[in-house]
Image 1 (tube, rainbow, N blue to C red):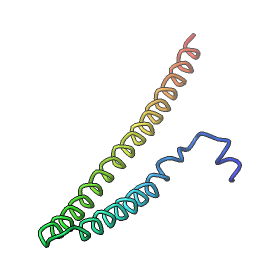
Image 2 (image 1 turned 120 degrees about the horizontal axis):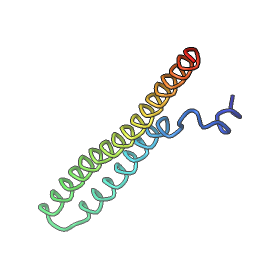
Image 3 (image 1 turned 30 degrees about the vertical axis):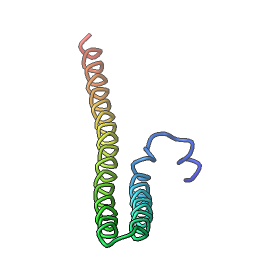
Image 4 (image 1 turned 180 degrees about the vertical axis):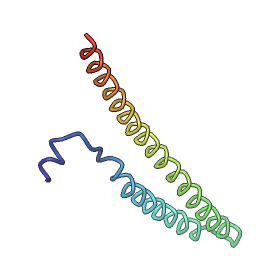
Length: 106
């Protein structure tokens, strides 16, 4: 089965990988937000510290939404790919049945 997975391109691997990729991006966003948070807490004055905390939270929310949108766009592209394969199969079946009908009438 593993050999078939790597040698056959009948099934797409990337859509299954997108979920893992999404959570990896969220993890990276969390690390970046923590870095921003600690950098903000290192500032002088209470206003600067509060601004660092707020910016870290805003960054995390915006980055998570952008990650989600990016992954959804990738999923839509692969759904379009699957639908095109279905359309191709239907057209191939129609052409094959038309050829059989024409050959029988001749």
